[in-house]
Image (cartoon, rainbow, N blue to C red; front, top):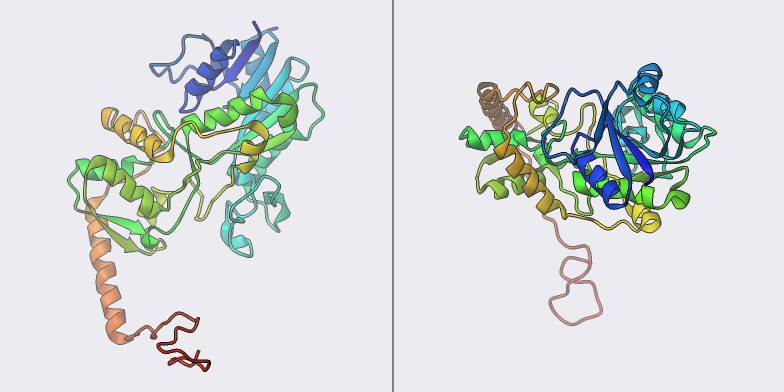
Length: 369
């Protein structure tokens, strides 16, 4: 039975990956720090070691070799070096900060990322200034794909992962407001931003697709994203529909509603971050495991059963300062009304640009078209 080492494995995608490897006949071992031992994980061997440093990683695995290593957590560069000569395939999880314009989009012209971002598109180091976080993520990816290694390799670029046990419980910003009886909520910029999201089960399927196609995927990177994507407004409305709730969604510019905006995209991210998953479909025969709406429903019901606490989610920073939220809504509406009074601005009369004659004829129509 071939051996597989999953480094991480206790987050939202890990159990699905581990279960998929077991179904494929692997003898799976999970290596993680042991800080989080959530229930419901597949029954496999655990190694408690720190995967951020070569010395602690080597001490944890000892002399064992593996047919497959999945680097889903820890420092990828240390993992890539440690298992050179000690595994047949190494698959690493990276992220969309490798793309030009994902971090600090205002430094890029045109603004932000290409839409959608494809794997062969421009990367962060092609800009004038490389954001520090992008440089780290890109360097880790290249330590797997570009370095001369003994193993076959592949990288999966995660976007906004969601689902049970996610490290950032995105949906809680809406769920808690409903539970708290709120009647209104700020939705920055009319909710027109969009950040690609991927259900944990769908992301796991792409990781397993790389495992299943080691030759095709060798030295390749693959985006993961749900087939259907939602703007912030659509996503918020979908969560409210799942909860059977109504809340007035009040648009406030994101440069004013800074706390509200911080609850929506990944840390440091800005709309729009949209990635294309066509390469995984083409190379890996990937097909979506769960539709986005069904996956979102699963995530919402899990949060209802497992309310967010600071201890369980130390990096979740939503403040739920409703007094400030109400003051901001009221102040912005008052300012908007004042501006409209000072500078009345009526939109022009718009019509379709193609002619629509009201009577037969070969001349211009009634609008001169």
